[in-house]
Figure: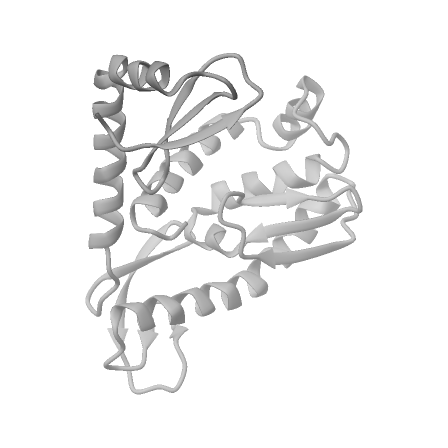
Length: 225
């Protein structure tokens, strides 16, 4: 029998979930007997093995990934080398990601995140302003966020939030996320009209979506979430 976390609620049927931490959750009705829950879990052995295996592999990949000198970082879809340079602060010189020497992998990651945020503040608001002009939109503010689950968002007040992680995407994907959020200023849902607005600016938006999903899987495997 598998160890699992039991969550009871006002639901009619039992459900299994494998969390990002590779643990098994069972969501069951309030009064479902424990023996029936155990039997339900036992009946899903094949499903549990497959999904737990995938989750454990993903967790192992995250644990194994570490930044290091001689490695690479993405910037606007291109990979650039990580090099040690006598400097006080990490920077990008147009060809390389330059970091002070002797940083640990965790220190490199912390410095890289700070650098990405700085580069995002330099690049993304101006790019958003350009697309806002094209789309006849007037966002109240454009902010760089630390959001893990969302590349961008648009509030009902017209505030556009863009994740600093977007700086790892290629320019076409960056454009897509910005256009997507600006389109929400005209349509706050994902209706056919919303996608018509996006497609009017970027007819190939579906291909850009696919590249964004590929990048998301890569960053998840490298624990950039």
